[in-house]
Image 1: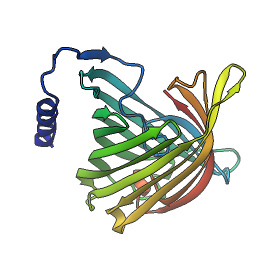
Image 2 (image 1 turned 60 degrees about the horizontal axis):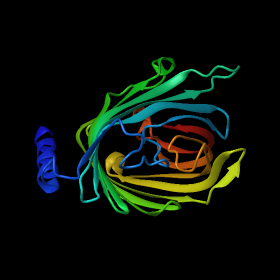
Image 3 (image 1 turned 90 degrees about the vertical axis):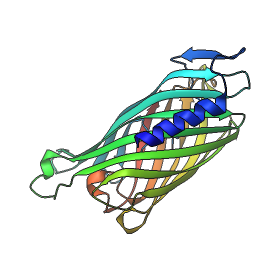
Length: 271
């Protein structure tokens, strides 16, 4: 793992050339990302609340991505380094308006990203753990769930209305022991903006799919249709309201071998 990071850093430095060439610039704590977050990926760090269509389960998420520094060399490319993290919880009804937490997942990692023209790339390392809620200790078997995952993703953004991405992931450490590879792909489609009381709104549709070797081979799919609301079209901070449909195995590590097919209403807060 350490050797992999060292090789990546060495490759980035050698391919980029001198770090202080004429025309280069550095931006610390920039307001924009080099690689924009994947809004349809259920496990991209984000903040949200979701109610299942059956109203017997709820999900909550608190997460963010912090880009510490961007390097802009004179060739027009951009490079960045940052960290990302999130916590995801699920609540289930016990009746009489009681919704205890049944599981929580935690994500924490770092990444390097690069963009040039219509293409952007991100190499990330993420630690993942999952923990069974107290209310299930006597009814469910708790497992030690842990992942140390490297993931590379490339994105093609020919316009503001269309995005296509894909990548691969590998878990160097995986508990319970399982097959470590997966493939990831998806797309985002947007309408034009329309004005709403001095703000801007547009519709969007997205599809995200993962093919995982774990649990005997799994295909996880997420479909999402919604609206994105911003103060100005050029802003990156937004509020999204969407209906989603998920089909695959559970995203929560304690239940990763169990099937999960649901639709729900969600409100997202993008940084």
